[in-house]
Amino acid sequence: MPEPDSGTRPETGAETGTGAGTGAGAGSRPETTAGAGAGAGAAAEPPGPFRVRPIATRRGPDPKQDRAARTRLLVLTAAAELFTARGFRHTSVQEVADRVGMTKGAVYFHYPTKEALAVAVVEHHYARWPLLLAGVTAEGHGPLETAERLLAGAALAFRDDVVVQAGTRLQVERPQIDAELPTPYVDWTELLAGLLSHAETLGELRAGVRPRTAARSLVAAFFGTQHISDVLRERADIVERWSETAELLFRAIRAD
Amino acid sequence: MPEPDSGTRPETGAETGTGAGTGAGAGSRPETTAGAGAGAGAAAEPPGPFRVRPIATRRGPDPKQDRAARTRLLVLTAAAELFTARGFRHTSVQEVADRVGMTKGAVYFHYPTKEALAVAVVEHHYARWPLLLAGVTAEGHGPLETAERLLAGAALAFRDDVVVQAGTRLQVERPQIDAELPTPYVDWTELLAGLLSHAETLGELRAGVRPRTAARSLVAAFFGTQHISDVLRERADIVERWSETAELLFRAIRAD
Image 1 (tube, chains in turn green, yellow):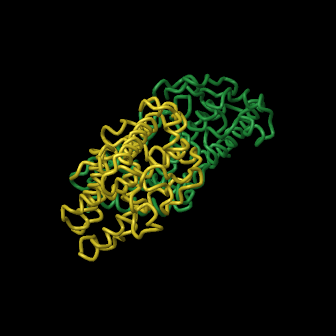
Image 2: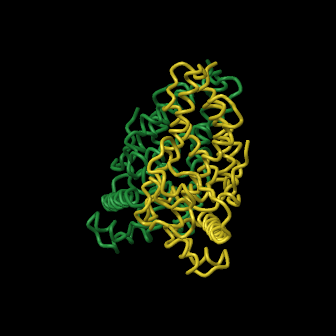
Image 3: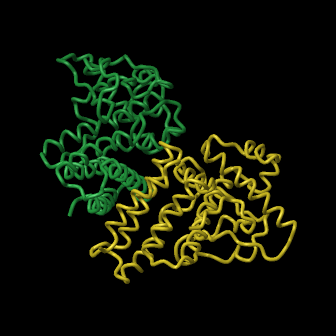
């Protein structure tokens, strides 16, 4: 299983902006400072789960854009570390700037408000999952096994990837953040429901198990597991805890 | 199944203070204004789950204490409504006072800080569960059925009981609250682990299911279900959602 991206892969350079059909925008102006490549204005509401698109890749070499993109990613990662450790309210843009050795003004050039930083972190969180899905799909398992491996990979990401951790903390803190964040949970539910529907057609599901219902249960149990693991153990045991819960749920879902 | 107490039962009048072995106290002075009856100083660290004791009942009639206790409960319920709707940060003691038609000073007489109000609400949240447990136990089912009915009753309480709702929101906001709240999740896990261990001795569990592991999974799935139902539907569908997830988990836990 692929180790989730920890935020430093060179090809994930520029955001596609904050308005790609996710409802973002209330508290965060659109960002146009970094070259976002070809995909920026394209997707109004793409079909399928994870409406926030994977981060666009650069088109051909452009050292200036390249440097801007790297800087943006550095700022984003520093913000994610602070959001994860302290939460939105107790993180300041000055601290983000200090962490990357920039002036506050330079940070604002890339992200005009703290809210815009939070939105970008949450969007990067969601952009992780299509990468994970692509990796697991490439392994060529059946749909039920793919669902199991996806969730196991997500547990690893929640343990190891600060952008994933920050995105989740910010989602939980959404009542305190004056910006529209993507609606949580629904994309994961849709993705898993699709896999389970496919599994149903292959006879992999126990009689009476409804794909969407089971998908909702998986998402709820996963969220609860990672949250409690965070509160009690700072997620040190999330992989083991999820493995135990997944074993029970998939036993009930899988045909004998 | 008993409908959980919605905060207005006359016999639940006075808190037992904030220091009953729960680690509370850092940000909240002990409260001594209301007569707490006989149980107040007793329990250092009582055995079993729910170390916060059920709210002590009055001993004999005392109109003055009675009125103070009623006032405290009014203030607490008003605070719970505001905490549920707006969260800790966006609730002020002045608003709590306005809601019950008191001065801010009068509220401070009962709860010296906003943090003390939050601690009291969380403790009342936990004090609900022994009442629920007593009601379900009285129905005389086996331990596995008792566990199922307990969680179904908890889902109702999360839907209908503003003190339960407020307590959970405050627990999620605990990084933002400058007071020590009781450790969440562990008492529910302990309670369910005890019931499942009993079920194991009666041969009610599927071979290989470990009581404590399954208890952790139930608590995680329940927490995730209520949280997602809150975010997406303000808990309007929590009872149905929990019923679906419980069906899957108990199918995996129960012996065929």
